[in-house]
Amino acid sequence: MSELQWQKSTYSQEASACVYLATTPTGTILLRESDEPEVVLNTGARQLGALISALRNPAAL
Image (cartoon, rainbow, N blue to C red; front, side):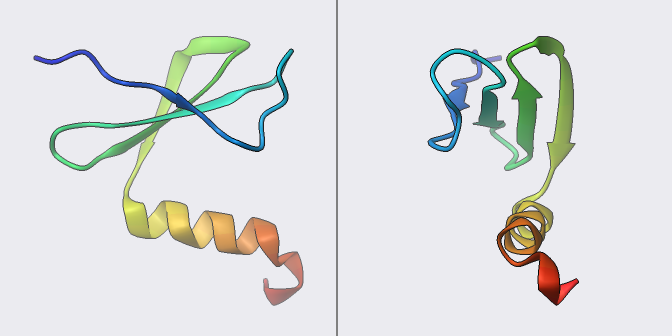
């Protein structure tokens, strides 16, 4: 199995509370936070897109 390539979110600040994303070979998207990197959430592209849209426009909820 290949090692995951974690990418830091461009919205994360340099010092703390960084969000990292990685994609598995099957297309699953993994999310983790720098303070607790052992806790990993998994999702799909459609679900992550819906979350990002909701965060950008909370009035649409």
